[in-house]
Image (cartoon, rainbow, N blue to C red):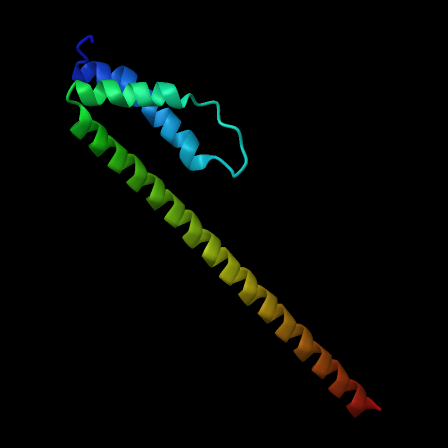
Length: 111
């Protein structure tokens, strides 16, 4: 097996794994992903055999952490948007009810 330097790992092996992980993390259910699990396994195996497992683990933890932070922010924005939409709907309903009461009172007082 050829020696894999840290530069090889960073320029060749990690980018392949990084891309595959991106696809796995962002795929929609039922989507087909053009990933070769054999190539991923081979890439990981070679890196581990060449003593790059700690670097790969560190890169993977960073990747997953960044992904989870992004998803968390998206969920917070979506949650706020849903909350805001509910507040707008409730306010609109209240305004319509108050307008209806005002109109009803206006009709009763003028009639």
